[in-house]
Amino acid sequence: LKGGFVADQAVTPSGGALVIVYCVDLADAQQRILAAGGEIVQAVFAFPGGRRFHFRDLDGYVLAVWSDAS
Image (cartoon, rainbow, N blue to C red; front, top):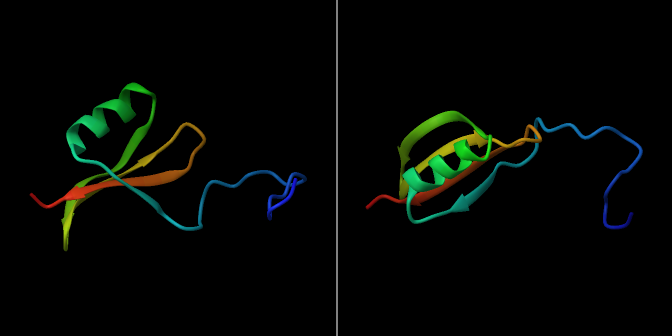
């Protein structure tokens, strides 16, 4: 493989950058994630500029979903 991928070591889902995805409807996104087998690891919380939650995907990676404060 090219581009910095390493094929001879096991993938480790912990550590690294937190990928944050924008959505309009946090509740809908959370329901879809749960329906697909994801796990919510941090409930919705407010931060300057919006609200977000964190979830673990089926491969063990933690990602976040955020929306505007309104």
